[in-house]
Length: 134
Image: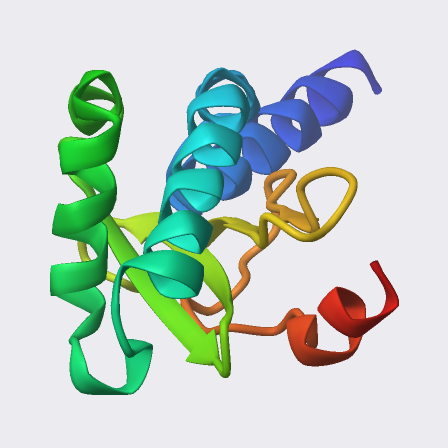
């Protein structure tokens, strides 16, 4: 019975590891992600017409506003989704297979955190409605 328990623990641990980043790593990125989504929101809301600039350009402008944030996201993939003057930022693993955190600055906290399950690297937060409420 004890052997079966050890095998089960090993199996569950290996499944969690195969999904990518650890919970500790995601927890470590929550605060920098919150600051980044705020910087992105500032770019989208005030800097220019967000329809005319790419996700990469929005991120670059956000990193210019907050240069100390860039190193936190090295080795990850970031995307920005824009609706009007509101935005959401999605952090995924480098291969863009696993979503780690999704945040919008208009929310009260981080809207989506991956706690070890497999979640595809796609936007899921309906921030358009969320931002209208705030």
